[in-house]
Amino acid sequence: AQRVTQPEKLLSVFKGAPVELKCNYSYSGSPELFWYVQYSRQRLQLLLRHISRESIKGFTADLNKGETSFHLKKPFAQEEDSAMYYCALKGHTDKLIFGTGTRLQVFP
Amino acid sequence: DGGITQSPKYLFRKEGQNVTLSCEQNLNHDAMYWYRQDPGQGLRLIYYSQIVNDFQKGDIAEGYSVSREKKESFPLTVTSAQKNPTAFYLCASSKLAGLNRDEQFFGPGTRLTVL
Image (cartoon, rainbow over all chains, first blue to last red; front, side):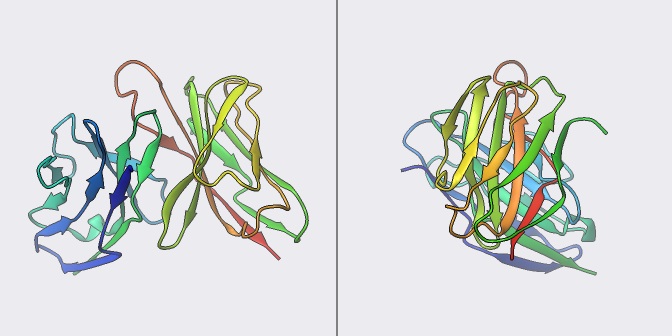
């Protein structure tokens, strides 16, 4: 079965603290994984994808096939990072399978 | 602001009524999708279409119907058979080929409330 698990509904940190949003997946093939973000009053948008191996807004995510994880990390959180974050898996078709999301709150 | 638009932003419906949510895109994308977003449940796929006049059921298609008569448009009808229709509905589109073909672009959403 194809599944994406985000175990934390809410993650609260102070500004400047490191952040790690967890994502685990279940997939029988070679996965394509993404992180989408939804800031307050804005549209859901792509943050990054594992294929590009890039850092966006200071965030990185490494695909760990052994642990079937794709955790999103940032060494120093900023208040503007507060948002809803969704991990997504591209399945055998072009459909995306989304996790339940993690709300990140960054306090000043 | 081009891209993908949804209307209306808010919609109220009485029980037993069908209602149609609009989704239009000017990105020349082949694929379009409808999701339902509920608190604590993430995004769940209702229907998707990869080509005009063709569409497939997603994970929660019961009580919904769609059409894809034009590439730019993918309206969603919430029928009276949908038992719990109050939700936030998101439409998305994507390319099926070329650079960044996997990225889905989302509309602003429609919040449907059944009274």
